[in-house]
Length: 108
Image 1 (spheres, helix red, strand yellow):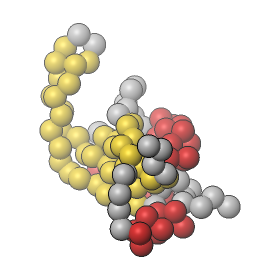
Image 2 (cartoon, rainbow, N blue to C red):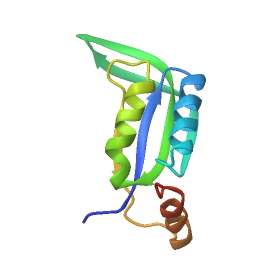
Image 3 (tube, one colour):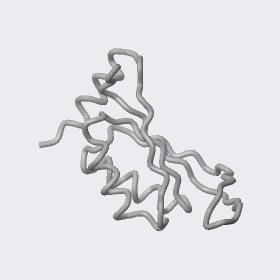
């Protein structure tokens, strides 16, 4: 299976950071849409400790071929040393919605 479409999950420190990243990715046509979920509670290992943070989750809708460009852009804008950037394949979706993603992420 090699799905063309992906959901990319990215957490951010706050709403302002999430909005900046989302706006930039949409403007550059790297993603068709970004849904921002606020707040999310995260519990994780970091530098030998178990940490807890309130974060903001971005759910990006895009095409797999843009993933590496998205990673570079997020890393450039993100305040975290190691931001969460993971892709999940979309194995099915409405034809109209998937076509919309494809059309909105065509790079000039």
